[in-house]
Image 1 (cartoon, rainbow, N blue to C red):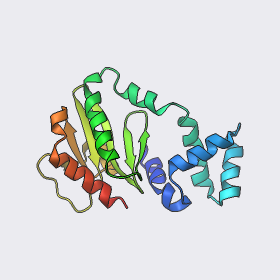
Image 2 (cartoon, rainbow, N blue to C red):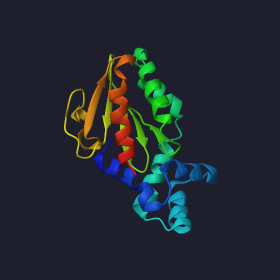
Image 3 (spheres, one colour):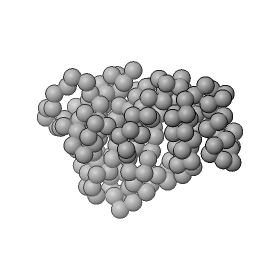
Length: 180
């Protein structure tokens, strides 16, 4: 994902007062035929800047693809990794009800107030778990962000369900807690 777009998405809750998922629901219920009508609605009814309104409307069009279909297509040919993904999601679900799980074409973002983790099936045999951790040094299985660049500060490579152990859950929990 483009860095600027990811930054916009991360800033939506702070700048607009609602999570992206809430805006997508509002637009879905309003069911605008034209992009410009939806942008004008957000700007007029919610005093939103053009940049955020346009981004949210654009994302609402992309969001018409079912989330399950996006995840399913990520794991096509990588079906052996699906249990790892499911375990990560069920683990995160225990953290709190304030998490938005946002599937994209190649990854799934985990967002609280900001994105705190990213799950990406990197190869047929590996999931990369990207984490945003402030002031944490690279150590053990916690590597630098690798291919995630600035979207995440760290990465953990996961090959099987046993890799999602107490250490991984500790780092994932810390990323969640720091994302307030």
